[in-house]
Image 1 (cartoon, helix red, strand yellow):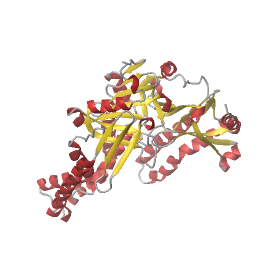
Image 2 (cartoon, rainbow, N blue to C red):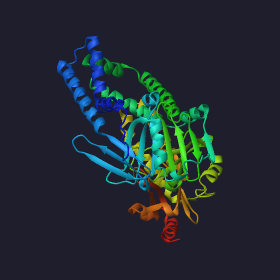
Image 3 (cartoon, helix red, strand yellow):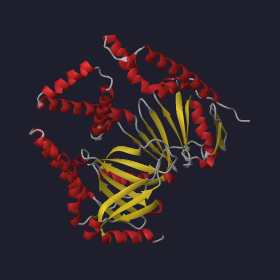
Image 4 (spheres, rainbow, N blue to C red):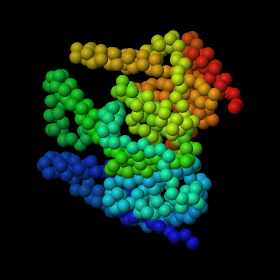
Length: 470
């Protein structure tokens, strides 16, 4: 009979924290306002504190019951999981149904020598991923080795065929050129928007008076400072996420280690790779720098993050890197570009933000300069989208190139294409143009690649190639 294990008791506390995180900001503001002597209304009276304490108490009790009833066991052929407080679940996962077993550890887990173990299996009713939190690293390692498909050879020491390791300077360059400043900036604005509901009326009136009476130059300076802070935060965020990045290649899988505060250990089977994408951001492109990512067929993970196998690589080194690591995926020498008559359509789509912002120039003459910069950026981006769009067909693979903000090159073996479509609207029919869409299997949902306004001759050539069985 297999031995049953439980998660570390700390999962009770972390589970309660996860459920109550939405209350943290209001509670923090309540404490700050009380310390400042602000009148905060009936929402922050003693009943609010009682509600929070009762909620924490019930969450602790329920968290303990969830921890107590969660048990798991494993052997060479399967892993079994028992869970549920009111509704009992017993799940058995066979070894041959497991795609990958990944390890992850945040700062708390690292201090206690614990990890979270994620088991990915084929998607089934949204329950394709199993997560076991806070178990000893030695237990997680033994479980993974026991369930490894090649566990009969576990006693043989394997060595990596290829190793990629990035230093801190390279990661700082990658973070500085990642282009994620917009994400951080949007997050800061969203956080400010949430806090506005809790700011006392007196302070809110002072802020409103400041922005209405302050010169636009000062506001622009504050905006630029906000961008600089967001850029610095994005650099630190990126560097911490990919710190100690190491890629090892074995006979039939890749092994990736990355992260400082949250360490991740990912295993990717070569047979599960469906496509390779090469991403060149606007900032990186002049320096000929790219990121290489994978589209992998696996369990329905909640994460939408792509598998990065190289955060920052010189574009000239990509062909050799792929040849050594994934010889099935090769960069084509040339691309068939979209026809010149498609340029107007690309510029028209890029001009939509300009048309939407046109009304602001009647509010204040200052917006004329902002509108001009927006127009230059949008039309330039539209032209780059037109210039970069294209495709290339070889005997057994398809390469599609397109751009939203970053230029993306997708390398897709013909055998991995799940479905495709050709779309043409009335305006495209007049110009004899079509939009191509291709889908491959990926986690958590199929990945799509599109190229707009291909010539109808190109579309027919591609349709013939896709329809032909090899």
